[in-house]
Length: 276
Ligand SMILES: Cc1cc2nc3c(=O)[nH]c(=O)nc-3n(C[C@H](O)[C@H](O)[C@H](O)COP(=O)(O)OP(=O)(O)OC[C@H]3O[C@@H](n4cnc5c(N)ncnc54)[C@H](O)[C@@H]3O)c2cc1C
Image (cartoon, rainbow, N blue to C red; front, side, top):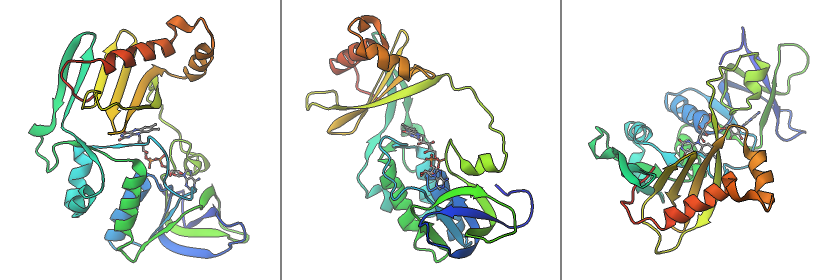
């Protein structure tokens, strides 16, 4: 994202007494998958790049834990796939769902023309730490943690922060960079939210990841070995209502009770074990 014209500094709120001025070819605000991957690609191409990440680490539970075959193929092309697959992960080779009482296989990755014919499950922080490690092999890469981009501002006055030819806003859905640059959001109208939760997994539970679809209920259960990572689809903006209904004794027909009955039936499943 290049802001109107010229080189503009990006204000930087990390250490409040740190007034260094850093010149860099490209500054990326946000060390999520988008920012870190872009930084790796730029550093690999010999471009000096600085990533500002506002958090002290990448620890964000339940974020982007599925790494898809197309992403794994890019890693193969970058020559980092083998090393990546040495990190702890789980592999999901098929996607299926139980719709009512019917089991359907939705996808079988064995047919893909890629090196990895599976989805890799890995916590996003492990993935980001891995990408950071790879990027550090290149001298042009620099990552500043606890460094929050707070504003874009024009020339003039005293500059505290980062000066870059190109500023990239990869700071997520509430992007400060996007807002300050006056860029409009294109709302694609996602009609649902997802309620994420963790359930303990018994040794007798089905082995694979499960997807359950029933009237007005969708539950995905990702097998994370010692626990289930569950995604329960709810109406957009419906979380507060569900929370209130869950507290009422008469919540018999609430989405929460739907969830518990779906989980109960998922745990007693005897059909094919497949992933969502
Ligand atoms: C609960 C949940 C589960 C998900 N599960 C999956 C999944 O299984 N598979 C999948 O492929 N995708 C999944 N996603 C989606 C995936 O996580 C996102 O698509 C992906 O994280 C988007 O990457 P990003 O780099 O654009 O933004 P983000 O991941 O949001 O990264 C933005 C980064 O910028 C930092 N930041 C924010 N503001 C500033 C600032 N002002 N200055 C500096 N840094 C800043 C943030 O700390 C963050 O690290 C999930 C998302 C959620 C919320």
